[in-house]
Length: 589
Image 1 (cartoon, one colour):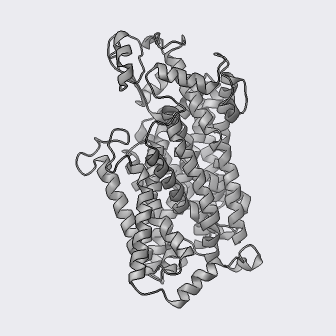
Image 2 (cartoon, helix red, strand yellow):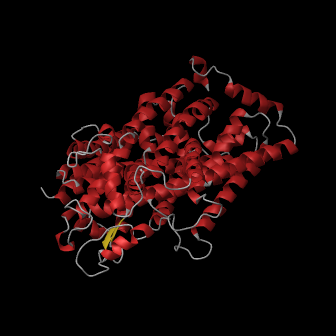
Image 3 (spheres, rainbow, N blue to C red):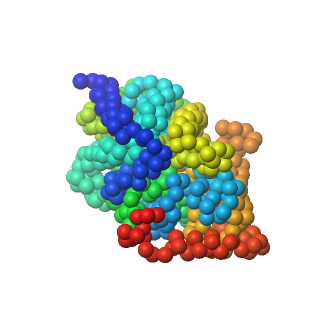
């Protein structure tokens, strides 16, 4: 059976499964649509949360970013996992105890202000739409290769599938669909990693193989990787190269952004009790760790395999001829995500760091006139099985896994957006007397509209999938996370402080991102990699942490300069923090 047919079978079977689950678990009420009727078991919810969390950024893009940068991009791993600990300890149980459907609803009630609720809706939509762009980018990358369609039609197909199971099933359908998607994506990620780890190190556990000896050379794998990348003028893989300050701020931005992402938070509204919210977070960390412990090995091994493809004789002086390139390179060239430009017309593929001053003399002596191979970082995980010559069914499984990762998170984000529009905007402000049937209809209309917008923006993303997602984390960190933390742990912050804090954090962060990327002046000319930071070494993907500090500062200054919150709000904050949620008494909340 040819590879294209295998891809169709695997992807088609998983899509049929997702849509079938959505029809079986179709939401019939607003409680089922928003919170799955609060009847999801903690283990099931933990698995669904892991799938919701491990997006295209985790599955498709993260290992690629680690592979091309090395140690510095380990901050993705530290920030995303560390943020989940913050979410589990500081937010999830208290928000579940409050007993609302959406994040803006909590903010509106806690800060006794419709304005605060509306500002939270705006913050949620800005962060979620930015996040979903990254997912649709991943969908386009996966479809363009494995189903041999254009990026445009890949996005159209992915949007249609999400529409079917998310609009029909709501939170109830999405939860059970995400359980299936987790099983697909974790299987698709680990099986090729095990094969490749065995090939390169003889160790079947990728996380251990990363620190084992490279079979062909007899030296430790990471030492071998350091050697080959430096031979090509690239920075040492295992050493820090960038600004420590920027790395710390980026990690912090990812951490608090994780704890402030509404599509993850609403997952904890689906369990019966407060104690179940804690258990859900614990199980989610277990399921997430299975992929995150494997990702560094996938990145390092993929980088080494890629270099060995271009320099098959083991020396940087003998690159492969373009006419002799392997089949996997030909396949990815069709997508436009891998390109070759023969700068010196010698018919050989020279791939090296042509920006390295220390390597310039070496390149000139070899007759090289510029690096000739361009590899999109988002393709590395998807291409990894082909690079390693794994069986066709493994390649098809990876295709299905990449799509599962992107679609699962896209569905969660779209649920958060639709809930904010239908429940917080329409029911909360415009039409408080709307019927449950009418609210459910508007929830589905809002989700359909969000899918259209996300698909359109996904055609022209601002960066690689993980980088686009990092911007969303920064926006959530600067706007939503501080409001939630102050709402739970501060009795003094009032409605005015919350509103001005959220606006300050969101606006300042957006301005920094737009200025850094050059969107105000020459759209499309700047990128994450070539734009100079505006504030010392701090890049736009790291600014969310500073935006959060501005949010906290403005909120406390304004609150202390204005009236204290009403006594009933002080009592409400106190009741949220009373530690009685682990028992049956919390079931009523």
